[in-house]
Length: 222
Image (cartoon, rainbow, N blue to C red; front, side):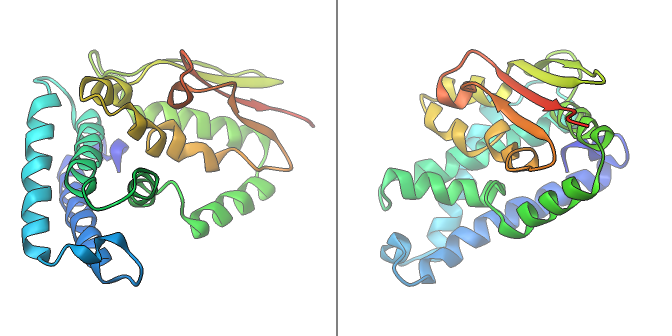
């Protein structure tokens, strides 16, 4: 969704609104899951209003003039994560809450993981390189985007190095760095890791684990 700003800004905005609607609805519906700590939240309408209020607050605080549509969607995702953490922290254990946020971001979807592994098995090294390109494009390339990266494509090994991260900046400003492990590079790991055909993944500790940068790599073993 992030990269749609170049193709159709109108469609991107519509999908962004739908994504927020789905996010809030999924949290309200989670109250009815057996064994969920959110069962204690009796008023679903009040929960949704609180989530929307906190989302608007965080989005307004961290969105900057001049940010393009692509970067704005990342600010929106960060605001959704922060609003969820703020509203649900009184009702859920920390790790359970982080896992719930991770699920909503989409970093733990079994069907998506299966499709990624299948396409990697059927694809060549150039396709894996293309995933690095798409990851860089997905973050935004405009000045002041909050993301600084370096992409190196080589016949033997290709790398994508993230030096700065907008999510890290936002979560550190709110003293909620632990949420970083729920999104951004942490949510994209399944696109690369667990592949038997290619050596690929995140080298060393990334920013979510306290590292100075996130370094993705793909090695051509053919």
